[in-house]
Image (tube, rainbow, N blue to C red):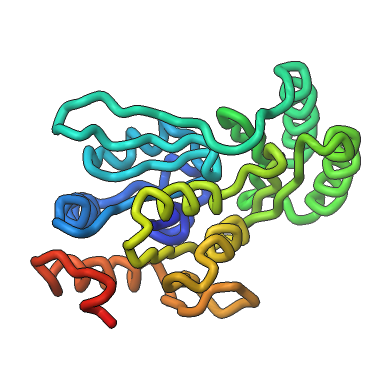
Length: 251
């Protein structure tokens, strides 16, 4: 189970610039085809982004921090089934209000921009003017507080991004669902961001939780320094074993 941005591919100023190379796609396709191994990418991105970036017919794709889980078809070419995880979100009017606040904040700071997700609003400031940044972020946080206080939404801080999402929707939901599908499997999760801490928590000591990037306080039990190291790890995993392995054999 892998996060996308900052884990499979390096972080980029804009999401559309963070694209996987053909060699990485071949590695992932090879892993997803291996007997005895299941592959999942669990991302904060919308599902449409994951479909375009990762044309992997045999992989599970979880979008919007685990809100939507796209299941692989049982046969090549079979349409995917998408299930929704977590609690119901607020109505359209609430999202429209939050979107308007985010757009107003972005308009006030050069280099800040809004990503409109299926059920979430992200305010990106990786390229923003630092001199104006603190005031704009503080104002946005105050202005969305009435919707956070209702209990339906929460404000999440990530890598140079503030995101409003449905409270109770997180990557751990997808991890828990997948572990339920394969209760005898050894679950492994790799992620770099604070949003991946929910996935690390969901493992509950059942398998390795791998932080990607420099050291920081985390629930992860292992660490890889970069997406390049993740690619090397996946290559070794693909090449190491050609036959199914059971957890009992590993022990």
